[in-house]
Length: 145
DNA sequence: GCCAACGTTGGC
DNA sequence: GCCAACGTTGGC
Image (tube, rainbow, N blue to C red; front, side, top):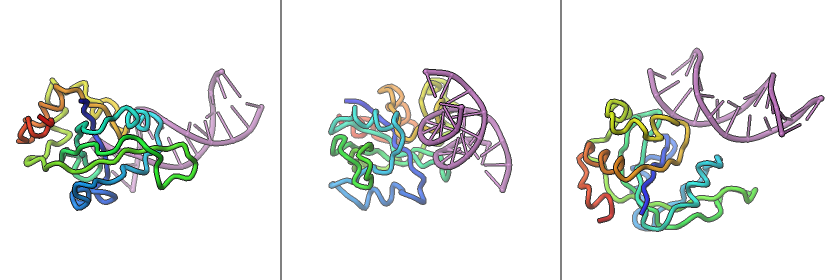
């Protein structure tokens, strides 16, 4: 089991919209970055991730789960790009802001802090757990245990 | 709205 | 294959 972070501008695709898709989940399409694509290729069904709102909010607002492994992006004609499907698992009761992440020394190595432009990122297990705790999330449930 | 950081493109 | 120019992202 690995952990990830999915970034989206809320006025393009918000966690609210993600939740409306329910158990079936939704393609995480539109990623046009090789690094991000390669991370998606590494994802397995059942992996958990954060749903992060960039630009507006700048906070971790939800927990998601990978429900389909990398497959061609249905919105792409070039054949180069792939995406996974994810579903919403639960809200983060107290969304964890970028400022909070930056203020926490134990999170200084998070990709979110060091490579803020990458839209799909890996998250270390310890980082995932800590952010869950900061957000008031039931850690066991969030981490699939 | 600005601009730094980064990734991609294209001329050579 | 290098690198300058350009476009995009995202924090501020």
